[in-house]
Image: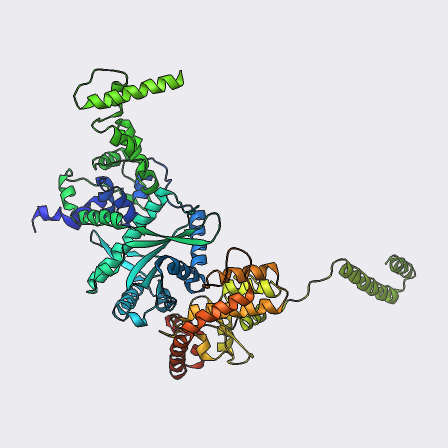
Length: 378
Length: 238
């Protein structure tokens, strides 16, 4: 094997990570990856399975990431309500939403049969159950509770646990996602719905992969996801269909990119390492050196990152330091397309001469806004 | 008590030790009665298993701890809490293994028709026929409808409490055609609607359960018929 080969593929990723154990992916982390496909930093860190939590802490940014224990408890509680009595609420919602016939009321808890025997057994059982459901629909249950799916992400197997998989609606499989944000008067918070859709897309993708590996038609997994949320201000579940084709497409592209991550790796400086040099539980690598190494990976910061990525505070500080427009959000960046930094924008507002003809239109708009602002403030 | 104390003092002064001792005993008895009148001791509660048995007999189906607690609150004493039920099945299994069939009934597991392993979180009664304790794909729905009918019938028999009506309404929300709007449900309508859906599933469910029950009766020893076959049970009994 030549020296160059060891620098490619998983070896190169292992070299980046150093001797520590890789961190497992989950649906949230995969969805977060797909939320910002242009961010090479996240792509590399995730592909190499680097512990972003300890990295960011060592870089001197407080660890402010993760779900609150209250949110998790609430999630558990609401799931229990929705799944109670053999998924009675889910059946009602599926009957209303997808016109499921009354005869279809079977409920199968995958966890029951595979009890505590580890994830591999539960995954195998899920495969068996889903295959027999697809092949002999007349004997199959309608709801599959607690299935366990597997997805290969950048060479590593990731186990994923969707809430429920519903079947028998037009012989199609639907992924059911249970979330705790309220749908008030038919309206829900858009960022939360899109986050849920991205997460559900991961399950749809994994389920389709499973179907292909079983030699079944992946199109039998519907691209519509059943999203179950509390209705208005009650603890009463309501449901809506969410089309996840777009996040699914993004996810597929992103996962393909992950498998072709070698291209990004080739552009990195040789010998780059993100190892924390852990001794026990304390990192010994100088923070400045680590910061320089992380900065070598190109990031694409947007304020949305704060909700989904551990590295967000580091990237934000970096974006602010170089006066990047990204730090102000995607809308601002798109509106001011063509400008590189906040400084340039400020120059244009204060009426400095325009250096290129493309900036002319933006300069006029900015100056008009400034006039409006001055009038309002005066 | 005051008189007694005075008598004790007099007897002690007269060096009559026997009398002092008997008077002291009398004083203690009077004091105990006095305390009891002030604060009557709580009645000894019947054991948790009896409460659960009562609830399960009303429901007639293997049920989850949460439903048992709610039904107890709605129709009985309301003394049960979720935490009391967590280790109940394990304790019953231990008791059965120590001296089989020593008690008139045991609170046991419901079994999956697929692998005859215990279903998570469901409690059943050992005196029920085996098919009733089998859980096939359709059984959760059938049992939900049966329990709804039993609760609706019971609500009709008694003067229902607010908790009982709320429970019935909650269950009825998931039975097609049982309720209109958000008011309390009408028990007769709920029972009729649940029976209508039950007719659709019951025959198929009965077949699946009977087949699994026969398998269980042929293959499993008595203790596993009650508490389920599965790796967990084997590991624990080893």
